[in-house]
Amino acid sequence: MNERKLLLGLDLGDRFSQLAVFDPQRMEAELLEVTEENPEGFIETSVSLNQQEIIRDFMPKLRRGQAVILDGKEASPVNVMAYFLRKTLALTKKKYPRDMIKKLVVTMDKTSPQLITLIYEALEKLGISKDRAMVINHKQCFAYFVLYQKKELWINDVGMFDYRDGELSYYQLQLDRRKTPTLVAVKRRELKDAAELMAQDENHSGILFENVVTGLIHKQILSSLFMTGNGFDAPWSEDIFRRLCVGRRLFHGNNLFVSGACYAAKELGDKKRLEDFMLMDDDMVNSKISMEAYRDGKYEEITLVKAGEPWYQVSRDLDLIPDGDEELCLRIVNVFTKAEKKILVELEPVLGRTNRHCRLSMKLLFADANTCVLTMRDLGFGEDYPTSNRIWEKTIRLS
Image 1 (cartoon, rainbow, N blue to C red):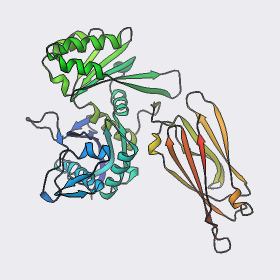
Image 2 (image 1 turned 90 degrees about the horizontal axis):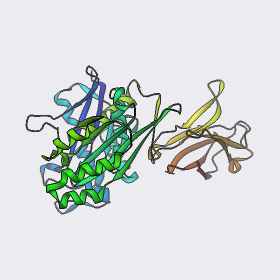
Image 3 (image 1 turned 45 degrees about the vertical axis):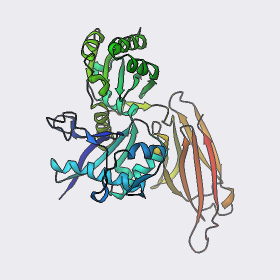
Image 4 (image 1 turned 180 degrees about the vertical axis):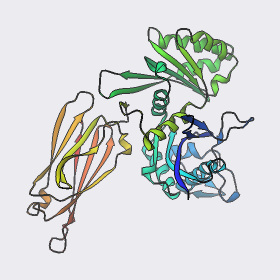
C-alpha cells in the first residue's frame, strides 16, 4: 500500500526548476534528476500539451497575467501549471515508486497572491490539497535553509548573494534572541546598479562584485556567507570567494532555495525542530488572533490566526452557536510588542436569536499583512429558525 512519506521542495523558476526530497537517513535535502551532465539537477520549466508545441515561457506570462497560447488557442493557466507540476512531481517515481507526497513546498523568486492561488488550484487538480502544500518565497527558503545548518554557521547574522540571469540581490538573516520565541527576519536588497555595472565591464566584474560585498558587510558581524546563482559560475569567482571568506565561512552552490523549500516541507509536514523560532517578514502576520469559546465541555482559547503565517495563506472557517452573546470578542496580541487589544464584533443582524437559536459561519481572510477581513453569515438553526441570508463584514487593522 502506498504511503504518504515524501517531503518535497520545488524551486519553480522561469527557465529552470529544481526538485528535492528530504532524506531521513542523512537528514538533508536530496536533489533529484542529478546526472553527470546535469550536476545541479536542473529541470526545464516547460510543457508540451498533447505532445504538441513546447511552451518554454509560460511562467513569465502567468506572472504577468498574460495568456498562454498553444496552437493558436488560449490555454487554461491552471491546466498549464497542473501539467507542468504533474510531470515534474512524477520524477519522484524513479527512486520512490511506492511513496506518495506528504508535504510539498513550492518556492519562487517573486510571488503574488494571484500566482499563488493559481498554483494551489493546479495542485488541487492533482489531488494535492492545500493542507499538503505550501507556497513560499525565496526569503523564507533562505531562512529555513540556514536554520537547518549547524548552529555555528548562524551564531551571528548570515548573508547571501543571489546572482542569476544578470540580476543581483543580497539577503541578510538576523536573529533576535531577546524575544521568545526567537524572531527570525530576512531582509532583501536589490543591487540593480551593481549588476548593470558588472554586465557593462565583464573584465572587472570580480573586482566590482568584491567592492559591493565589502561595502554591504562592512562593520557587520557575519558568521557565514552564501553565494548562489549561475552568475557565480564565472572564472573570477573562485579568487574573490577566497578573499571574502577571511574571518567567516563561505559556501557556494546552486541548490540553496530548493533545499530550503525541502527543509520547510520537513518542518511543516513532520516533526518540528524550529519550534523555538518564528520567521517574520513583510508578508507575515505579526499578531495572534484568538477568541474564547465553549468546546468539548469546557471554555478554551481558540487560535484563529497564528503569528508568523503569510497573510495570503490565511483562510480560517469556523461555525459558532451564540449562547446569549450579543457580540464576539476577538483577542489580538502583537508578537513583537506583546501589546494586546480586543475587537468586538456585533451580532446585530441576528439579535433575538443569539440564545442558541442561530448558527453563524465565520471566515477570516487577509487583504494584506496588516488588514484582516472577517465575514459573518447567518446559517439559520433548523426548520424553526431559517436563515435570514444576512452577511456582514468587519475590517480589522492589526496595528
